[in-house]
Image (cartoon, rainbow over all chains, first blue to last red; front, top):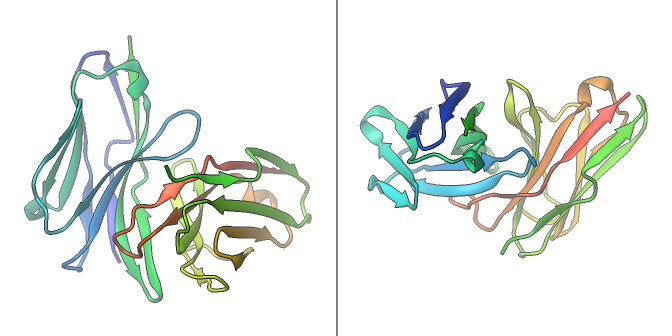
Length: 116
Length: 113
């Protein structure tokens, strides 16, 4: 079975610190997709990024960056110069083939608290 | 922008009641999903549908059923609500199977007394 592990349950940082959220996945598929979502206190999951298994280029979007390494089955997410508004639960997910379609297999999430 | 809406943000029901949770998306997406989210357990897939009138069981379908009569609407039904179904319910939709990004609604917090 495919699996996503987010070993960090909770992280607390002070504003302006950099923080990295870890994600390790397991899959036997050669083609797969990885995702990161943010869930602020309001509850709605917000899509951040999608990566396919053939694209190992790192991605940067403003203060956010993602490091995808197939050799270690990791897809880590770094926030540079964190801000209070980054406080949320972050989920890593793997697109998983089922018998009749695809669905996302989510990690259990990392709760990030950024304090002033 | 993709818009996924859910009929209620908060719902309180009594044990044994039949409960309907409605989800509507406005982007003509083929695929729709229902998850529940519980502390320490993350998101777990209940049911999904990749076409009108089609449905597939997810990881925890027991106690739930679904209905997809129209492409834009996916309903989750609790035939006889129980206290262990108190949870946050999240609906999502995606255009493509597999690679498709799932877009989520705001969620429904259901309390079963």
